[in-house]
Length: 245
Image 1 (spheres, rainbow, N blue to C red):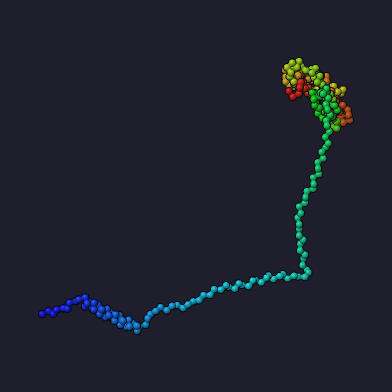
Image 2: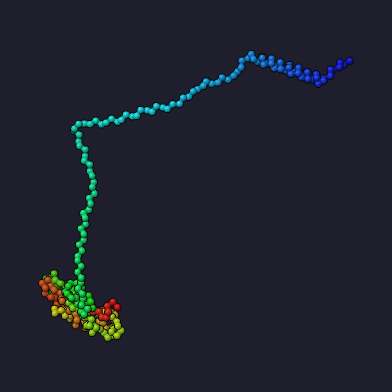
């Protein structure tokens, strides 16, 4: 006959749970007591290191350099100092201006002749001739220290008009004729030859050949002793009509 097992009720299950819990609690207590007798292995902390900060002491300053020893006497004196001074240029003297002398007023009725005798070229309706000479002393040329020919008289406007070609007067044309003449000792012109006429075709060359010996007077070249030289040629320019046209 099989024994009958007791029936597990709620009350019995609760009691069994309590017994099991108490038993486990006792077993845990015994286990803890058993381990209490063994030494505990705890890590040992390292020793404490204290650090103190401080400023370093500055080093002492270097000693001053030794002074050179002074020797009394016997030494050569120091060379003198040289001072370069820039010299100013000397002042420039002011320029002397020559006083201005007004030129003499020309005579409108006398064209081509200067009022006074001079070595300067003559201007006007007439012209100035230039000749050549040679020799020294009292020879046939001006010589050393002599003077060249000089115009003394030109032609007036009325005289120029009297020999102006009729064709040029009717056409109101101006022109010029140049002739080469020999200066005589008596200041007259001789042996005149035509050199040029401008413009051609109006007879200005032939009119200049008539006007030069009739109206122009030249002083011949002079030697150093003042003797006149005959036979010197001079070129005379005769202007017809208004100049610059």
